[in-house]
Figure 1 (cartoon, rainbow, N blue to C red):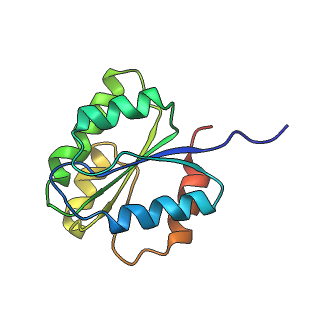
Figure 2: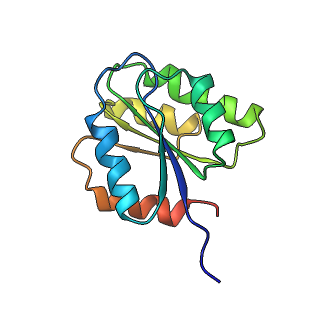
Length: 132
């Protein structure tokens, strides 16, 4: 019996208008054999969580450049827990200052990937940490 396909929701929370990084990550995850749902730009935490639950994903990956990661990322984690989906692995990426990463991890973000992170590192992290 084959292993269950990893399903990943890639989301752009907040007012960011730049999604090149998110699209590159989405393609790398697809190339690694994962099923990827991309929600598009300017998603609210509620929209992200609703899509994650509806699509029955294993992972939510959020990309942000606007500086609102300290508010938006933890809100997604909290809403997932409220919806009974707290077992979904949540990762983040984008322009996030190193000093903000410990607070994000304390808030439930499993890992944060900055600019220049090798795509293979992101793929490997998800493969090794998803609860399938």
